Image 1 (cartoon, one colour):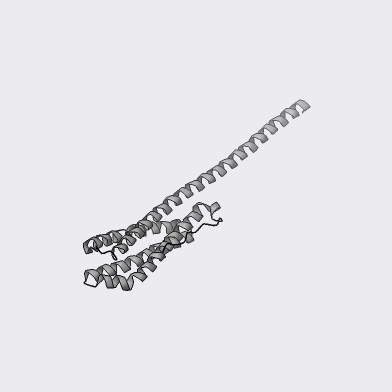
Image 2: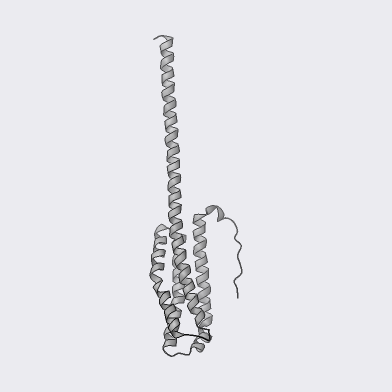
Length: 190
């Protein structure tokens, strides 16, 4: 082979090598982009799952507190209270579904905090269910409030703590860069 042929073959080989390296780089970039897109989709699914769970937990928490607040009122209406209790109980299945979705989605810290929040709300709901049954059964509402309100307020604080913990765990997963920052905490109202 003469030098011109060798030079031509070297040029062709260089072109082929350059094409192979370029294609490998393109495939690598595509893999990184694909992985990044999958991470974005996972984050989006988690955000929706966590958001749905937070929404039903907050709604049930608010329904329980609304029912609790009717007991000390002078204008206590047993019929209205039973309606509020039905509303509270009707939300139970939605909470169970949402907590189940979070349990599947994970991670464990978020799933456990969702379960704890749901359980804390259910404890308060159970107390309120007992109160409604007692008052409808003829118990003295004022005596019930006087003797039991402290325990209900403890349950209410526990509910608030557990719901806050759940939303905090969600934020740690959804916004990991912010999880190392100190959070300003407000003092609870008395």
